[in-house]
Image (cartoon, rainbow, N blue to C red):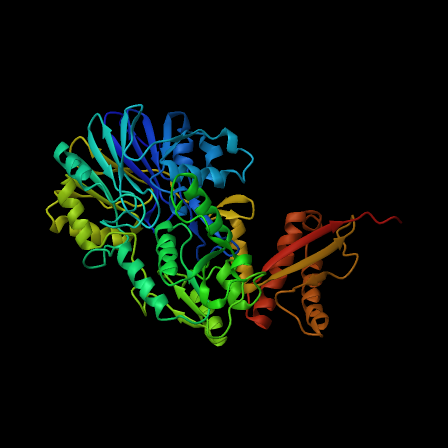
Length: 558
């Protein structure tokens, strides 16, 4: 049955980011017109071996792409714009972003073959524009990246505030502080719904300021005057990069960059007017020529990424940078859930080499970019919404923020999950249907659905192995040679051939039992081969491997 979508109601449809942290993709609809907010990715997923990047399936809006007015990006983090290079060609809509996000996206798109086809409209900070029935205003916020924005989305049925990722930081070190006066003015205007970041809802109090991190980094560097210092942080956290630079300069150290993404982000930042006071950042090569106690390196790899600079440095195979016993590595970042093992591996490699490792558990050298409970409460007080829709979180985060909103006297709370169609106005807010939603996985250069047979078979191979069988039959259905069996993921002993001969005999016996019609039917023969192997393989190996049968038929000349 087709999904009924009323035209005279304001609808909210999250396709990603509601039920997980990452791969944000949100839709607002009214009068058969649609506005998309963000198009992000997430990195890896359990059960998808060989996949590094996943993203929302845009099938619902792809079916309505002629009604899609545009994509508005709240900021430049990968979980908010990283899917554009993979999905834009399916939608081919105009894109709207503030200067840093626009330049960052252009840099990413430069690696595609359609970069010049993407219409990217740059909206200045605090800018306002109209798309169809939607009047959209950027509201400056603070976060762990330059130019994060909330969106004030005005519709014929009321005003919605979509927060994006945010926190309140009165001294963010770089960029502007959150526009609290604008949020309060929006509250005065009347907000029907607040669609709000839930990431840190379990954190009591309010999120700390970047200015405090800068002071603490300077103190920490002063305590380690000997040897090289390397700092690992997120490349996109330009405020943190600036804090590290300033703290290094205060301690008489020049700064070098190690990592391609750091080079790209700092270049983009300069293009739009940031970091211009620091023109003398060194390349990794030049930094290694500076005396050890006079240099600091900022490195990629705070999450233990195997190809990032810090991982290669820890393994001793970086082409340029070398750290030695007595040097110091500072992790000025949080551990993203799921990355603990990879981060620990890198830290252990460093410690074994006599390098001191300092993390945010040891010193106050990191603050989150997301709001704690006190910040959320303040946002509610400023905007005074009628409805709270928590997003950007797992189910437990969404439910907890809904409960917090209820405690703060927000009249209505609606907990979404990917694909829910929520009516925001007029009337009471509630779920009115379910839209098609899912996950696409980037497998090499192609996008596959998460439940594709490719991944089912790959998981089966990971846990149970694979067995390849080749049999050759003549025109009468008689076996010409013994079956050929290989099982590289199951056997690796010298006597493998002897063990596999047992399975070949099982196949021969089973094929001999087929009747005259069955031996001439390819499907029947392949099924018989699989049936012949399942039980003996399970009995001998305790495994249920994927069995791939290659059937060859030849005409023998008499």
